[in-house]
Image 1 (cartoon, rainbow, N blue to C red):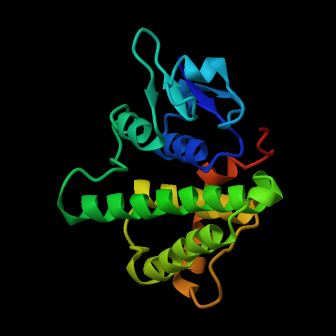
Image 2 (cartoon, rainbow, N blue to C red; image 1 turned 90 degrees about the vertical axis):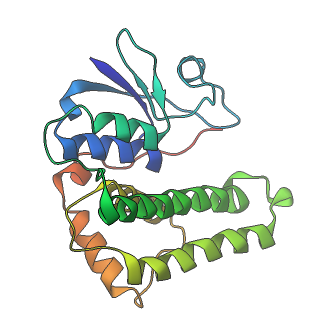
Image 3 (cartoon, rainbow, N blue to C red; image 1 turned 135 degrees about the horizontal axis):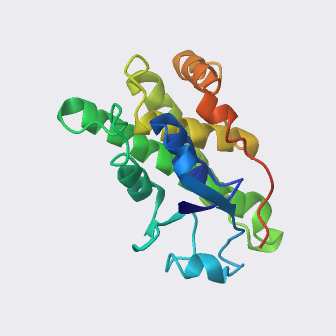
Length: 206
């Protein structure tokens, strides 16, 4: 059985697990929680990923795979159902660009947390935090107009839902009342069994 090195409070790790549930292969992996941060070296994780980050997928008899995008691409080869990463045409590029925005939202959110809660107060850089916050708000505006809410579920939807859920979980700036399409889509996606099976919990330990 594959082993997924995971964190219960990581949007990137949750993205992989939600993807596995949506693909119907979550039962093919053992999920193992591992605490990591730039200030907390986890030797088990470093043994599988030279960056020392989760998620990392440990495969029996094969090399490990890391980074949520790469793991999801691999998992999409392990099932016979409809592919969650479209293989060609504009559907592929739409899914991948939504995934890219979602990953950027999570990255910006992590950076905001460093400048608001995790870095010692005397070392926080307010202007930098404002810049990352702008990345959230401009992405929300883009998603309100560009998100393909009617298309079948794809990797971009999964990445976006897990990123938005984590942003709310960490009490970071969320989309407002002026994003009704995004809010309606997110509210429905959170009801999916894959999201209910993978709740966020816990905090980062540096």
